[in-house]
Each structure stands twice: as structure tokens, then as C-alpha cells.
Image (cartoon, rainbow over all chains, first blue to last red; front, side, top):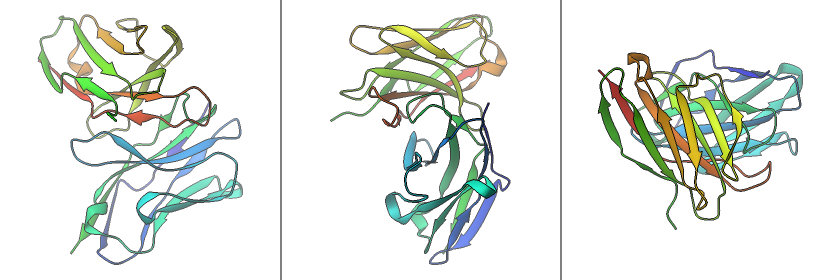
Length: 114
Length: 113
């Protein structure tokens, strides 16, 4: 079985400052890991994915995440927040690939202050 | 190129009724998955359809059923609605292959009164 823990439910940053959204996972297999973003009244959009290639993964809109097996973590970062980054962010794990059953964390609400 | 489209966008039903939600996958995709997202929670996997068969199922009761048509579109049916079924229902499609990511629709907001 696999699971994801997003300890922070809400993160607030000022525009132009770094973003750090934390995620820890548990999986019986070598996992595939993802970050999805959900803007209000919109569907989920894939930010980036890790599928056992490079441990530092670059995604869209300047986001990146680092897979650390020893810490079972997959934290999402961005050097400089933009107002348009305000949204709900989900860390997601899959035991069997990108198009198989996804297990979502509870999500982190990112607020960006002007 | 249209992405994943879902209908209707909003729906209000009464306890005990039945509901059908519809999903058209992104062009070129043959696999459809359904997720339930309760307010303030992450989406939960309901089931996945491929080649008109249910391939995987999450921890949902038999009241939740689905269908996939030859054109790859899909329906989610929920019988005997409960207040707790109120949620955003998301459809996601993907192409064949473990590295093909899911593309999500904007969802159907179901309210059960």
C-alpha cells in the first residue's frame, strides 16, 4: 500500500520569496511521485513527475522537486513566488506508473501575499 | 484539441435518487479513471476503465458503477444517493502505458440534499 503525508495544510508566502511545500510518502514498491495543482473551480494540472530517472525533477511554471529515498520525501520548491501560484497543491504517489491508481495527499493551500 | 470534458458541471439530487455523470476523454486517450473529491480533501480513486472493462477499483461500495463505451467515453453511476456522496467528481484520461500521465477534467459538482 502507498500513502502520502502533507503535514502543512496552509502555506503563506510573499510574492518574490521562495516556496517550499513538503511531502513525505510511504510505498511498498519503487514509487512514481507527482505534484498536481488545482486552481479554484478548475481540474487538476500536472506540475511534474518522478518515475525513477533523475532525482531532481523540473516541472512547469518554474517548480521543481527532489526525490530523496533516504528521507522518503518529495518536496516541491520554487525560487520566487508569483501571485498566480496561489492554488491547492497535491502530492501524489502511484505504485504502478503514471496512469495507474493515484493516491493523493490532503493538499496544501498556497497563499501569495502582494 | 479539446481536453477532458465532463457533464454536467453542477447537479443537485435528493437522497435515495440515482445520478449519471459523463466524461469524454482527451483525444488519443483510451483509459478513463474516476475520482471523488470531498470538500477540503484530496481526490480518492473510484475506478478505472480500459477497453470497456473495469480494470482497477478503489474502496467504494457497489452503489458506484461505471461504463466505458467503444469511443472511450465513460459514465459514472451512483445509486441510492447519500448525503455523504456530495463531492466534486473528477474524470481523468490517459493513453496506454505506465508513463502516460493523467489529464483531468474540471469535474462535476454533485450536491445531495
